[in-house]
Image (cartoon, rainbow, N blue to C red; front, side, top):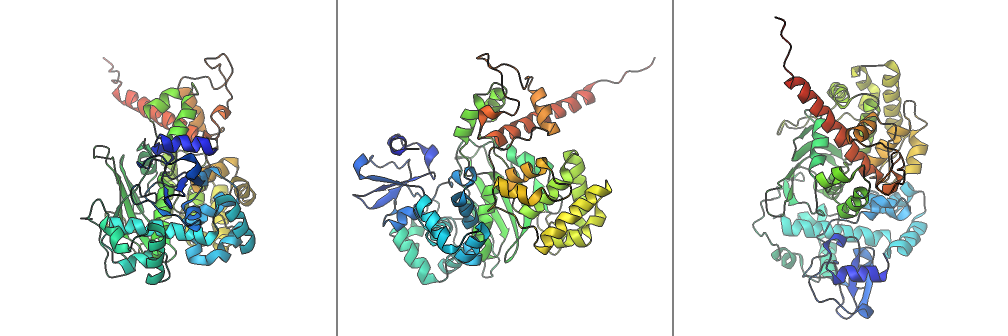
Length: 510
């Protein structure tokens, strides 16, 4: 977007752009979200920033009225496959908190000096400033949503000391932590913090409307008992993080005011909290721009009815890249139900050390466990079993290292050499691990079934008389979301066929 497109967005107070850029006003010294209800400033006094960190570095503080830190993140970090986009995905995942700037730079293949120069040029702030802004956002969320002690919040958000926490909150928000907590719209927060490093929290997750809860159904039919639980409006699971195991649950209430997404964290080491929050947002695709996606998909006659019936479709992500690769390799070329059965068998190799809660009592097996003994639990063709074992061994040894900081090209270079991994697997991993928005799995059987179930000829003429591309290039860069619609259409047609078969009365021989 150019300057005047952004200016028109803030003049219209358009909530769709909240979190996608920030408006700084020189005469007030503050920065706002695009939908800030304050009077629209004169264009000559406005500077737009890609990130809140850039506004911080330029000397602006956050608006106390519109709370620009309390918005969904920008979808650009999944759209962008450049160094800046990859870096932001890793920063949001807490890499700087764990490994420092040097660790972040090493993952991206640059020196720390080069990385600082690139991010300062592209985003207006270096990696330390971007990480600082992320910490401030996490701290603000915990202050206004929970009754955790300020010292616990400081370390949970990634600050190295309480003093650093206090100084940053004062610089960014021009308020002390206690004053910021007093602004909470729901002062009687249900969340609390225990005295131990592992704690329980309840938070509301911001997202852009509309939101289709079908992502919960997608996860539910693939859920592994003991590790995951899912319904049409909720999802819960366990996972490993850098400092310990965690357990969370997300519930969606379409009938409640504001249609909240409520996150309940049953257990997490506070040092892992920012990482957990980032991965849950990725899992549910909460930083997507659904209006832009639906507008593009709805213009295709093959998808228009599906988009109208399910606005705000989300693309499920992954909370563990290594786990997702194993699941993809097991699930390729077989049905979802068959893959789930195989994964349930494999899950017996995982740890059952968690205290049982809501039916969740074990963890998905690690790459080491699968390579060592888990493969013996798999059934099916020996070639597939050997491929899964080989990939697990490569991940366990460190020879295969991939994750949120990759792009499609680097995933292809790392994964395609593996036995049993082809373009479908790479595309599926790209969709779910790095949130690649423009992947179309043309050879996927469910995609082809989805096209047929919609009653459309994939190469037939559009309303204008022009022929449509079978790879759906007309809706680029949102073909991953087109794939989600086609998968849903195929699943719906399959369910309808089963229902019709069950309802057909049996013929009785006289």
